[in-house]
Image (tube, rainbow, N blue to C red; front, top):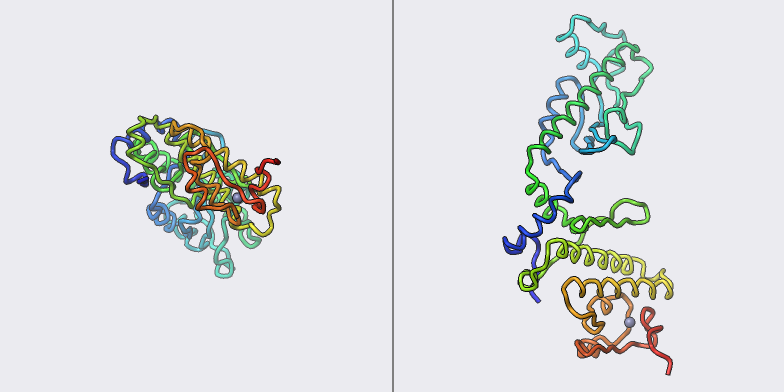
Length: 305
Ligand SMILES: [Zn+2]
């Protein structure tokens, strides 16, 4: 069966996926180049790198942008004094102060109040307030700018970027699944789909998305088994094998095939499965399977005679 990555699917199938996905697209907007912002704040003595910038968009109360990094105090004073009449007096020990940091106060949201300039003892309070005000202003500008970029980007571009860059198939059917630490799983897997079959069956974009998601869920479980095979007890292996089997049934349903265990594929890929692989390959389409009595995943499926 010939399968392809998204970029290689026919235009027709790509369009279908993209069109059906537009409504799901939301806060996954990515920006490649931050030079414009880093250069702008540098004039004010703010030293930041692109990894220090964070933002969240574009429709809830936690939305906003902020950044961490450091500030060269003398450079800030110079710049400030060159613009405002309200001159800042250079502190006597300014050379020793050198830089202050900008740190994250709150890890959950991303807006301007979630970061703060360090209250370094030797910095007069007035000066600190001015630096902090400037930082907040930059955070607000940053978000406005990001919002404009987002608003000017077409929905189709956004969706396409999403699908290609991260293989975020999970979002195609609006579904997310999480690891134990409650962050979305990392999508290291590439999902391949059969273009011919999609056209032949005239599958809706939503279903194509679900197929991608099901493959991801299976691969995620396989990954877990491969990484922990020695520690996982047999009853957990049985359970996980059962989940994978269920996901394979759902795949058959999406592809509009009969639910037939002898066409399942992944159950033979479980690490340490001792069921006879070649014999089972031969049984494809017969509705039957042969299990090994020592297999940690499948031995319980052998019916008592
Ligand atoms: Zn087995």
